[in-house]
Structures are given as C-alpha cells and as structure tokens.
Image (cartoon, rainbow, N blue to C red; front, side, top):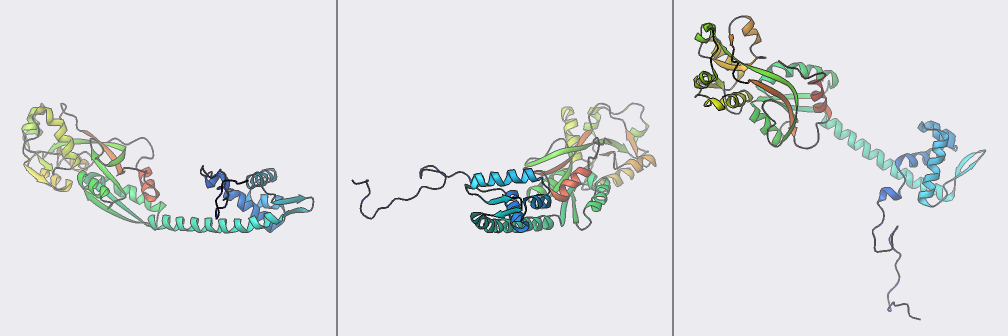
Length: 329
C-alpha cells in the first residue's frame, strides 16, 4: 500500500524532543551542567568516584546522585561501579571526550570574562559637582585606592547639569550631585544631606541686624551666585519661587571658591554649602545669616546611567560613600 510518499520523497526524523512540529526543549534542559561534566572527567582520570568527589569538594553520595541524574538525562550508562573502583562504559568514554571540550570552552569563556573585568577595573571615571568634588570625594578616593591600588581614577568636576551630561554621554562611570532630585535619564541613591547657608562678610548690614531678613527680602536681594545648572542655584530658586523668585545676581561665578572669595571681600551676600564655609565661619571671615523662613537643605546623590547598578570600582566607591547612616551636614 502507498504510504502517501511520492517518488523521490523520504521520511525525516523529527527534531530532538519533538514531533517535528514543536521546537525542542532548551539546551540547558538536555545537556548536563558543568559540575556534572567536571565530575565525569575526574572519575575518568582518577578511576574512583570517591576520589573524584573529594577532589571536587562534594560527598560521595552527592557524586553518585549527580552521575545517576546525568545518566537519566542522557539515556545511557556512563560509569560502571564496583568494589575495585569506577570505570567508564564505552558510551561514557565518548561522552567524557565531549565533556572535555565543553569544559575547555567554559574555561576559555571564564578567562575572557575575567580579562574584560580586569580591563574595566583598570580605570574609573568620576564626575562630581563642585562641593562634593572639593570636600568629600578626596577622602572617598583615598579609601578606594586601598581596594584598587592599580586603578587609575580621573575626576571631572562641574555643576550638576554638567555631571548629568557626562554620564549620559558615556564620559563617566559614576557621578555625584547636589540638588532636589535625580537628573533625567539617570538612576541614583541619596548618600547624605547638605545644608546651604546665607553668608556675608562681617561688615555687611545683615551681620549687625537683630532680626533675620525675611524670605521676601532675600528674594529681592542681588546675591553672589553659582551659575545656572548648579545644585546650589537649583535649591535656592525652588526655595524662593513662592516669594517672587531670585533677583538678578550681583555676580554669577562658576566655582564655589570664587563665590566664597567674593563674599569674603565684602562684595555682597552669598549662598554656599555649609561644607564649603566651615573654616571661614570659624575664623569670622564670614558670618552666617539666619534665614528661618526658607528651606535650604538638599540631598547629596550618587548617580549613574539608568539601568544596571554600578559594578567594580564604581560599585565599591558608592559603598564607601555610605558605610553607615547617611551623613547630615
């Protein structure tokens, strides 16, 4: 009788694990894991399941169980066990030869990944806003050097907007900013808090007042300020938005050091991080002006491009910034 095949046609065997219509099971479900293959190779080399188990740091019952599971998965007997030891069956010897190639490929894979990690860990590019770069990062980087003495670290300092831009452009591995929130396109974690203070030279009229200036007075006063895009400017803009917003700056300068020097000279009032003016306040070169009506606290954040958390030196630097409760200054 005809079986429905025309001349020149022949039957084909279905794909493994299926009827020719459904896809086979994933390779991970059909092939033994690396641990089982390493065990089989050790049994072939040592001639003993017990010695192979000891070499691999597992118990003999666990080794026997692993061999049996591998035999069930493959559908062939691999090892003959006897009081005199263990030897491979014919199919077991063939499977062991194939297993060696798989393990050698895995070793090459592992060596390649290790080389990639070494290359990645050989440098760390950090971007930080000015206050963190000047007053906090040096201590963190000294501690990091103890963990990664051979890692070359570069530090790029700028305002919060510049730090975000470097991260988004792939020019930095991790960043640190001050402000009210995480810049767009980045993920972040709060690592501490900072307080901004209004300061003047001792001869300024505010330094002699018995009552602090009101929020409306602050909003109407030209300040010595950082440029737009800085975390300091962002916090001050938000704090005074309900009171008419900031007046046009008296001076607009690109660094904390320049703003501080101008304030010390008596040019006018400034708003700076408490971290940046501790020495000047202690020496009375600057005076802190109480401003109870406006919130001037900001978050310090570690930031990175959206996606996976930092790895390698960047991950450990992040850990060094918050070994305990987040610092408040």
